[in-house]
Length: 168
Image (spheres, rainbow, N blue to C red):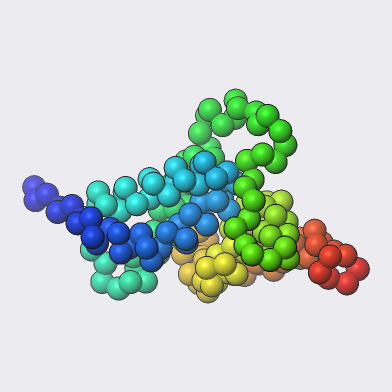
């Protein structure tokens, strides 16, 4: 059996520079915890480093990283210990949003209150600028389901922000 070559540190560094915000942001949107998002971030790039997998196109690499981030995030949030741990204060796991304007921070915080099945498509569409087809692939759902979740997520977000940014 032929062993796959490990990636070089320089190659990994380039990929991390390009995709670090995407992977971390998706993990943060999925887990709602900065510490868990950091764990997922490390696991995703460690898996990338270890696989030695080659990609024909950059879009395939991006899709692999997205899918791996979703899977690793799911593992973290479904771990048995999380069901037994209770946060000291409500909302302490949700980090402050990393945006400059108060409006963007408020939208980020409202997005954290959405159910995950709406939060992830909203994040991927608006923050990562993925198409509904790309979202569907990353989340292993049909494109129509991705469009429906985006639409319902927007409606819920609009309701959460009513009076702040939208007419009542």
